[in-house]
Image 1 (tube, rainbow, N blue to C red):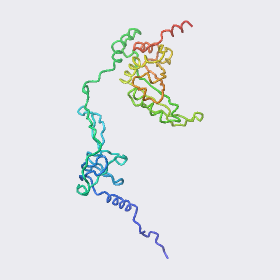
Image 2: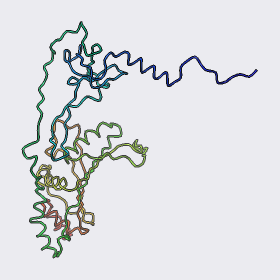
Image 3: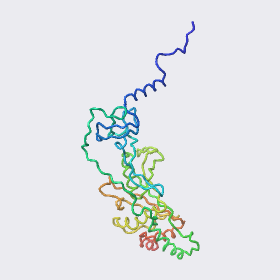
Image 4: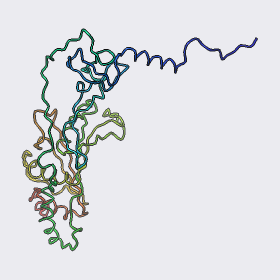
Length: 327
C-alpha cells in the first residue's frame, strides 16, 4: 500500500492565516481613513476631525488637529521660512497620551457621546518667524577680520614673506575630553556631550576604547571620551571667546606656557574646569571636568606659530624664555 505524503491538512496555510488575522484586526475598528469622528475620551474629548491614519494592531487612529505634534522646521531654501509647523504624530502607537477615535461608519458620532469642554486650558503656541537679520549676509568672525586686517601684514613684515600664502594661519582646533568615570556610569558621558556641544556650537563625537584593559575594567568598544574638531568660522569664534572671555576667568592665571609647542607649529593646552566658559550654568552641571585643546597652524616652525598666536591675543608668559636663557 502506497502512502500519500502530500496530504492536505485541515488548517489554513500560513499566508491565509496572516490575512485572516488582518481582517480580524480590521473588524475591531469601525472607522476608516477619511472619516469624520469625534473624540469621546482623553484630553481632547469633544473635538472633531478627519482620520489621517489608522493603526490596526493597537486600535488607535491619528485625527487631524487632535493628536498633532509641533516641530521646528529649518529653512533649506531661500524662499522657505523657519518656524514651528504642525506634523501628524508618527509615533502615535508609542505615546501613552495618544487619544483614540470613537464613532460609527460614515463619520457619525455614537448616540451616547456628549460634547464637553476640556478641563485643561490649551496653551497658545506662538509661531515664530525668521528674525530681523535672517536675510542679511552673515558677518565674518571678529578674530578672522582682525587677522586679515592687522595680523597678516605684520607677520609678513616680521618674517619677510613675499607671498601671502606663506603667512601662518589657523587650520583647525581639536578639543578632547576623557571621561574615565563613564566605565561605571555611562550616563555621565551624556552630560559631557551636551556641555561640549554648548561650548563649541558643534555636536561632538563619542570616542570608544581601542582595546580592553582588565585592570581598569575597560572593554574594547566602550565609550570613554568625547572629541570635536572645529574649522572655519566656528574655529575663529571659539578661539575669540576663549581668549577674550574664558581665559580671564581661570583661577590664579599667570599666563600661557610657551613650552607647549610640539615642534611642528601646533600648540596644546589643558583646561581644568569647564566653568570658565560663560555658556555653562553652574546649577545645571553634574560634575567638573577638564579638556585638552590643540590649536593646529599651517606652519612647521614653533617661532612662527608663537608669533601668530601672540598677535591674535594669546596671553603667553614673558618670564619663561628669560629663565630658560639664564639656565
